[in-house]
Image 1: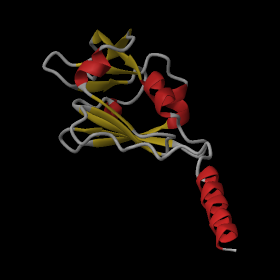
Image 2: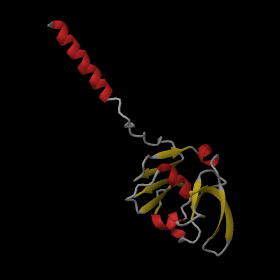
Image 3: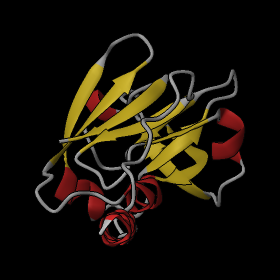
Image 4: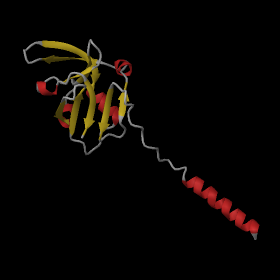
Length: 150
């Protein structure tokens, strides 16, 4: 009789272990606090990159005109490529761009998705800027450190 209970106990433990072996993935870790650029909020996985990692990504050039009417060419990573990598949630509608000085700017997600020239550009002194051709100067964030998907 004791052997029967021992076998039943072993079967229960094994079944419990098998049930725990499902395909569900553990939640992704949050971006490291020292990441140079982060994407957080309504995304499949929050991401963070060092400056070196961002600079190693595929880049494009974008032209943008400043408030003085001067046009310049910038090099950077397409903003949509970064959003795609994070997996934007279907209920997201807005991006909040955050600068290293605490300055923020809100921009419509659908407008950003339609912008093929919107980039996270590389600054000569290090760090990043949001270059958003055709958008208000208010969203051209210098010292960009985080993109919050809302």
